[in-house]
Every structure is written in structure tokens, then in C-alpha cells.
Image (cartoon, rainbow over all chains, first blue to last red; front, side):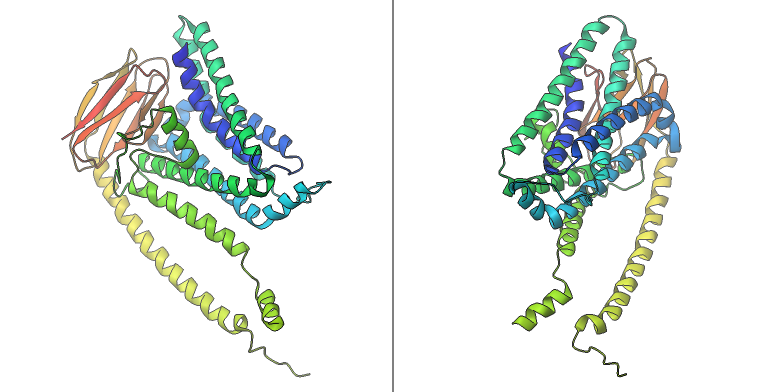
Length: 278
Length: 135
């Protein structure tokens, strides 16, 4: 029963941490609750569909269907998280300012809330489909299935609980700093996902690993441990990354940071005006 | 009407030339990376032409639990799940994570690896463990 609980917990934890970071990062945005929960519901439905067609997906594209699906899902999430960060770098300060003001009728109807929906949905689809398959494996096992399903429920509750804890913790951060903290969290989250996606593309044979293991820190911190697992989710810790994974990681950070800088660049008119004013 | 060209604004005069230079650089880069991708694809085809290695999952266990592989080359490993329950072939050492539904088979590409032991397990049934021994 506890073995089951731990397996389900690990899968749920990943989705729960991502959803809680997204929730904290969008604090004060009107209507975000609806979009985020919509994303989770869509994700659960999607997970069931993916699990139901696991066989077909697995054998698609010469047996690389699963890796390609995973890589696509992850890269979509990276794109959305990157977009969110670039948007926040432009509007975050105003948002934080409005929140500390009394009537925070957030003027961010322009904020692409669908981004939140997609990020949550994808996070849930990927991990959820494994939970569904695993639960199916238990149910098919017959003996002791009820006890093990109870374990699965326990794992689910614990994973959601951990996500809620992270969310509560993040909200204790003063509003002034909240968005820069969530900005960095999302940056690293996206970079880690990009590295994971690169791993799947290597596995599918679509990308070369270049160097199979740039370093090996399995002796220091193994991904089997809960700390290793959490760090893998949050900052993309990998005990034995390939060179292409490191490249994806660095490139994602560089791309998001430089895009954020670019949208905030001083405009020529503003520069000229500043020069004229001396 | 006299049209005065705003020569004091550097963005007006420099932008097109800079843009063209960027486009040229991008085109060159695209051509180079396409060539590189083509070469890599060729190598991948050569690698996949070698006969695959086989692992069978049966009774929640890997057979064989220890598979010797050659070092320094990319190999194809076919994992067949003969159980009804789905399995997830996972390896932290190799960054592999792949669901194998019951009564199906899947193909993994491993390496090129340096000599050593590379552990893997069934994430849905963690008592099932195995390793590649690369020599």
C-alpha cells in the first residue's frame, strides 16, 4: 500500500508543484482560479485519453510516439512559461503596485490567461497519464487491489498537500518580491522542462546526446531520493545530463532573459527625449 | 513641401542594413545546421541498422536482468512486455522514461556509452530492477 502511495505521490507532486507555482505567479489576476482549475480538469481528461491510447501512441512514429508526445508537451509548457515570464517582466511591477493599492481591480484583462490554463493542463496530462496507467496496472493485478488503490488515494492527497504547502509558503513572500521570486522559479522550471524534452528527443533518436553524461552526481544526490526528485522538478536537477540537455537548459534561460530584457528595452523616442532633456 | 530626412536618428539609417546582415547570418546558420542535421540523421540510420538487443518483462521481472552492451556506440534495445500490466522502463543513469503497455514492445536507443553499469527499473513495479553492463 505504501509503495503505491509513494509512486502516486511522486507523480502527483510534480504536477502539484507546477500548478502551485503558476497560481502564486498569477496572484492578483482576476479570473485566474477559473482558468487554472479549468486547466487541471482538462489535464485530467487528457491524461485519461493518453492512458487509454498508450498502446497506439507508443507504437506511433516507428515506436517514438511516446517520446515525441512527451517532448511536445514539455516544449509547449516551456513556451507558455517563457511567455508568462516575458509578460510579467513588463507588467509585473504594475500588478504588484495595484495589489498593494486598496481596490485592486486588476487591469490585466490583456494578460493571456489561457497561458495558465495550458501550463496546468500540460503539467497534469503528463504526470496524470502515468498515474492512470499505474492505477490500471494495480486494478489489473487483482489481489490486494483495494488496499493499493487506497494507497494511491493517499499518495494523491499527499501530493496535492505538498503543492498547497508550497503555495502558502510563496504567498508569505511580501508582494513587492513575490513576482521576482516566482519569475525565477518559473525560469528554472521552464529550463528544466526543456532539458527533459531534449532527453526525450535523444531517446527517440531525433537529437544526438553529443556527450551522454557531462557529469555524474548520482553519488552526491540521486534522483531516486525525494530531495533529488523535488530538485528535478523545480530546477531541473539531473544526475547524469547529456550535453544536449545542458544546452537546452542554458538556451532556455538565455532566451527568456533576453526576451524579457528586449521587451523592456528603452525605446528610441524615449532615449531621444531623455537626451533632449539632458 | 520640403521633406527633411531625419539623419540625426540612427535608427532610421542603420536599421535596414543591420536587419539585412541579421537575415544573412540567419540564412547561413540555417544552411549549416540543416547540413549538420542531415549528417547526424545519416549516422543515426547507420547505428539503427545494427541488430537490436532484447529484454523481456515477464512476471514483473526483467529477463535478462543484466544485459552486456558494447561501449562507444549507439545501440538499439527492444523491450517486450509480456505481462498484462503496463510497465514503465525508467533509468536515471540513462535519462530514459518509457511506458510499455501490456503485451507490447518498445524500442530504446542507448548510448554511445562509456564502460560501466547503468541501472534501470520498472517504475510501476519497483522491485523489478536490471542493468546494462557496458564493456
